[in-house]
Length: 279
Ligand SMILES: C[S@@+](CC[C@H](N)C(=O)[O-])C[C@H]1O[C@@H](n2cnc3c(N)ncnc32)[C@H](O)[C@@H]1O
Image (cartoon, rainbow, N blue to C red):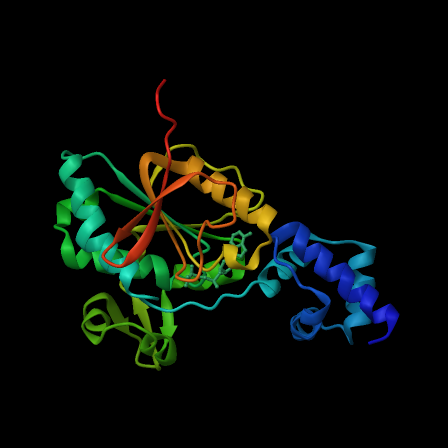
């Protein structure tokens, strides 16, 4: 790669790092290239050099959002890793409902929800276990940095291939409508129960002490240590005093500066705030 091209890749990798926190090192430039070429097609520019000139001139809101949409890895599927959904529906939620009888809300946040399979899996798993009045108490907020992927999440429409990735047939029949064109859509009453919105975990203002449960799985894995610390401590601030955080199966808090308690729920690791002992 010529030095002038390296300069271009460095410019875009810095832009991505500053805005999303995802690190593209020099060895990852081939992955960045395919993403930049995608942007060239989207803006109908000839090549990556022309794209770079366009960004140097003026970055519009659309150009900014396109970098966020293109640079993120949106890999996801229904009931990914299975165990967290079992822990949630068979252990954690029944326990919360027992400890907090009444009608108060139970708040769940799915941060980095990608195309929606994760929050829909959460709601389907809970719907299988809880009564209608218990489900009424559950509020699910699902957020992502990419507006493009959120449009798909909100639509709740999935191809046959996406459906085949993790969704039990019983759930397909019960919670989806057949569009008769090789796609399926989550039924409106399920879609309407999830509130989707844009949120950058690196720069957003986190609500304090609000969430009983946070899923933030397979998101921080792409961040450096400093950003991991920043995101995780903000997520812990957003948990209720007794709230639980679920990370991806390959993620942990080891190596971060955060004090936490770890709990194994039905084979799924969850993390809680460690409270300072009263003197
Ligand atoms: C690999 S997907 C994981 C989706 C889902 N949580 C799962 O485990 O299947 C990572 C998601 O995190 C989002 N993401 C990456 N960086 C983010 C950030 N700084 N703020 C919010 N979302 C982010 C991406 O857009 C992507 O949709």
